Length: 362
Image (cartoon, rainbow, N blue to C red; front, top):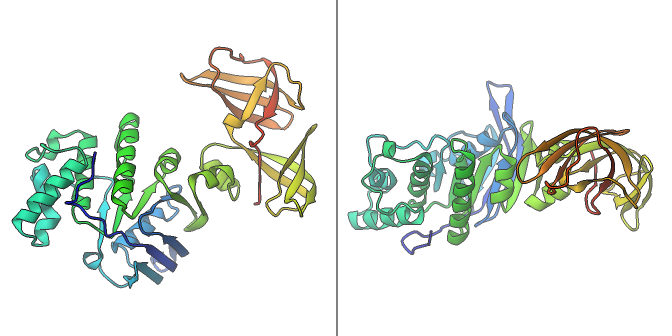
């Protein structure tokens, strides 16, 4: 896909100031949320069902009105504006295409409602179709397209309106795994090339990690943590984020001592002694998170390690998955070595990558 001067970006920032949404007088779907999305940034709202992410997205669009707080798009306070008066476009999970209209008519619908002249409608619609790789598909009906192509039509329909903010609500959930990967790459490429402000909702952790400049993890109507994909993966704020952003082994440990000047903690796990970033924690009981790909199984180890027994050994094509029983619980480990494998019942030594373990400041 390539960009074209027919579609221009008017990217604007989005800001929530202590926004609350209450349903039925008592159910808080969003609870005093404050957030900021920079112009030209792709931010993903990630979380389990019922955490408030879709309600947050719909309040940006004006499809839900706030109970309290303020919403700004750019410098404009849009808190009380209806959806029709906000310069925002939304791509829905269901695509929401008109079945009786062909692709060209679907993409150009918003332009025609805006009473743009025919020449501009033709130019922008054709440019939008070209951007999403559907040039020449204008005469087809939605029923004649694949799911991935229908999703691209929905994206093109949103793009041609040149919105200040583009919203995506679970846009890939109806696609198969291979197509999801392809379409998410296309969305990211478009966002980057056009400099669009995008707020993207998903419950898929891998999808969020792949497309985002920044991820806002939501839990119980509030924000659990905000940061870059790497920050959330490497330095989760607590057990919930550690386990939600990718898989994590979470184990009980003891902080023996803390060097506040160096910001390091001495952590004991069995006969292992680890020196880790203290993250503001004090000596005493603590929890440690380790990603599965940073737990290594060895037949023999010359470095301090923990003894374990392989309980499950599973081949999944490009890697092995192991469940290992130790005196400190069962751990899940992933290995790229599919040629030399450990069978169930094998005695192993468990070691961590140097940057593997991280303390959780619950």
